[in-house]
Image (cartoon, rainbow over all chains, first blue to last red; front, side, top):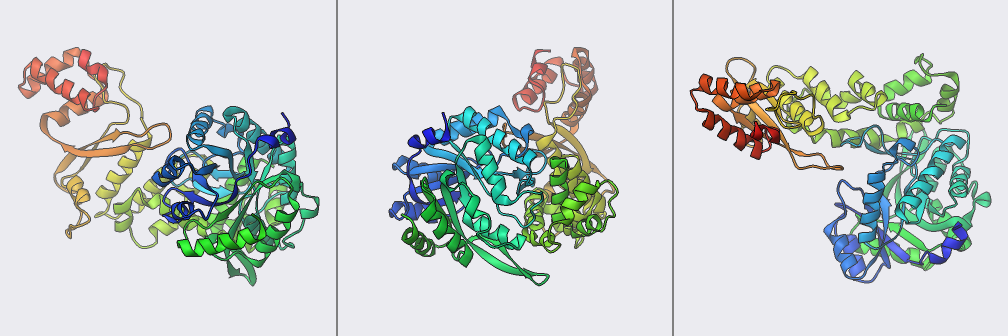
Length: 278
Length: 250
């Protein structure tokens, strides 16, 4: 079944908040207060999901599963037992779909201290690998899989970042998770206009968007941005979000990544997001 | 471009600025021209902008060697990112925690050596089943015996409150038994550590190289114990997960 046909079955979730093991109480509190429509659960099989997530699900709350432990760019990482475990866990929390940064979540073996988030190499070979990985995970679990553009300062390869993800989605016939904060960070690092490449990007494949705060820092006379999940998105993050929210016809969910902020601070950011898209 | 090779280089370059300088300066002869061109196409400042990566990695790794890191000389932990152990582990897809353990052990002074060795052996026990004897009476998978200066295990267990210096490697020794517990496909096991003495230590040393039925009798004679008493001890050790379960049927 094609992505267009599958879109019929992808629910509209609304505005959600991210969470992960050890993230604190803010997601649960905002969910209980009805300030968010769903919770995106960042999880790996080593730690599983937090009790607060189970409580959210038991109370009828909706979720998505954000993986933190698969190297989609590495064919050798396609472990059927891992995929089956993720499928079972995602089903247990009623996840609407799977999503997560498409690149590498670790270097070397699955072991403590090997976890880090590496962007993919921006070239055709890598795009083919990631697309194959997305198809494999979708087929194995039965869940829709949305690859996400990761954060990063170092981008290697001949392709542009957005061309790369457009190719991944086309080859995998999948939707996309566009993280506009990650995109803004990457464009700064590349020295490009934040909206560069958006004019040719297949926004009809964007099913989910992430918005988050970032922190600026200076290095060698240049200003870079760091993905802090803080309370204040960069101005270019907002402008990217506004543009994408207006122009992505199949957008089903916006996740505000602010899980470690005080509830009132996170709630204020969520309100600002709802003013743009709800 | 070999994608896996490039990703390993990116990790090494973003974590070790000295290495990044060497690569970008063309001083790494193993890097081919097209890869070097791709690496040089990145803004030179961006290599230093992944500033949290080394800190995050070291924080995660250090948690497994709390006492060794505490006893290490200033700069040893931070210097790991420039060490051959770090670069070799990334290049060979091998364990970074074990690589850090080796670095800590190499840099440990006399007073830190025993405790560092204990934590390194615990890290090994969490990960490496290691080769086992072929004999029917043998240690269970992952169980290790380590000879340490007397008092090392107790010092490590009480290190949070003890003000006394750690035992050093002169004088008496103790046999520490390290037994992994729990864990699974996605989780590392915990490691139980205890000092074993006398007959138990001797029996486990023999089991480490493998025992057969005749050795039960010989061991009983050596320890002035009956065959039934030795079999009882074997059964207890099997039930405790220290010996391979098959030993109880010998």
